[in-house]
Amino acid sequence: MKTIVTKIRTGIRMTGEFYQDEMKAILKDQGALLILLGAIIIYSLIYAYAYKMEVVREIDTVVVDLDRSSSSRQLVRMIDGTEEANISLSATSMQEAKELFYEDDQVGGIVLIPSGFEKDLLEGVQTDVSVYADGSYFLIYRQLVGAAVKSVGTFSAGVEIKRLMAEGKTYEQAMAARDPLSADLHFWFNSSSGYGSFVMPGLILIILQQTLLIGIGMIGGTGKEKNRHSFQVPVALRRGGIFPLLFGKSLSYLTVYSINSVFAMVLLHHWFDYPNQGSYLDVMALTLLFLLAVIFMGITFSVLFKKRESSILFMVFLSPIVLFLSGISWPAASIPPFLYKLAHVFPSTIMVPAYLRIRNLGVDLSSVHYEYLLLLAQVGFYFVTASVALYFETRHNRKIEARAKTQE
Image (cartoon, rainbow, N blue to C red; front, side, top):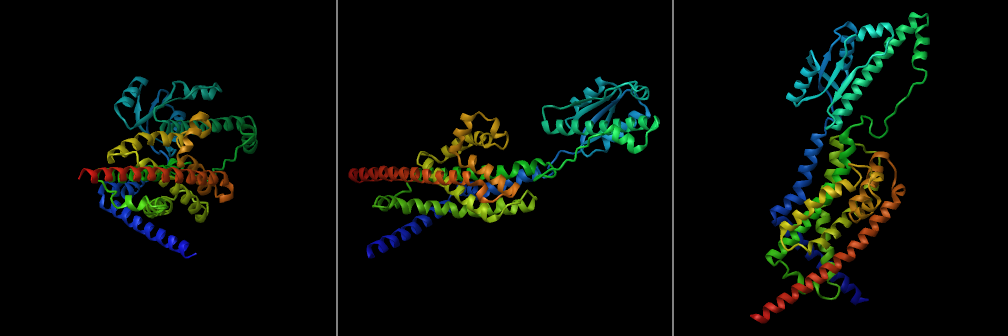
């Protein structure tokens, strides 16, 4: 019994020593400190402020009014009155409008009202209003086309109601005849349909994961460059010594990223009013597994980096792939199944949908139990790989030290 207690005390003491050693390595390495502490703050704030407007508003638009009638001017005022469009320029021809569009980067599209617009309306003949929007920016395209469709629809409804009332119908009858079936729209979980509220919660998780992997890789690469393993090798190769080494390393990164997680998942959500329907306890339980999986994964990869720059190059190369396969920028159901299954090697692929359901929909942990179990399995898998990686690394380092002593 005393032997077991002694081993536990020794293990705790060794874990504390390795924890202090790793924390010192982090704090002394300015590059790693910038990645591990500064990057999450800088990236999160930059992206959050960039998406602060949530939706694109007041898009500069060129109008070509070839009719110049009271009806066409009314339609122009209606389009200009929407929050999406701003009729900032007027042209006398389509060619002139195109020149203005290409010369001014702020112009997002063109609205063309044909000649004979009012005459056709009065005669009950269908007429067309053409909208040309910049399809290379889908947000601009969507907003401008939406503003035009909404304005033209409202204008068209007004014309139709006046015609029906002229035939003897009451206003209520005209409204019912014009719009017999109305849609009552409700936007759940993202009432403003804002792009920032849509993309930022998931993007924060990607930033947390990638900066943590880069930081762990940098510390590992620096250790090899500076031969910073003389303290670890003798103790780590004792029976059971690998686990205190792994626990000490992991706890140091968990300490740093617990602070980062509070900033990114609590403060940032509060400052920018991102959806927050779930329980913080459920978020914490999910985040703990996510961070542990990323940390063990990072320690596994860190033994492969002989130079600190290698981790940056490798993880920067992976970042766009991880972002795409996470299901944030493109629906997971539309990603080829093989690629999406392959992406499950990254904790973010599992964490993102579960996290979004908790924060946006307000579900509890039992509703994301499948993802929770997957993260738990990842923690176990990467714990084993990290233990094996550290064991072989320390054994290799001991051989190098023994060879160096014999040469002396």
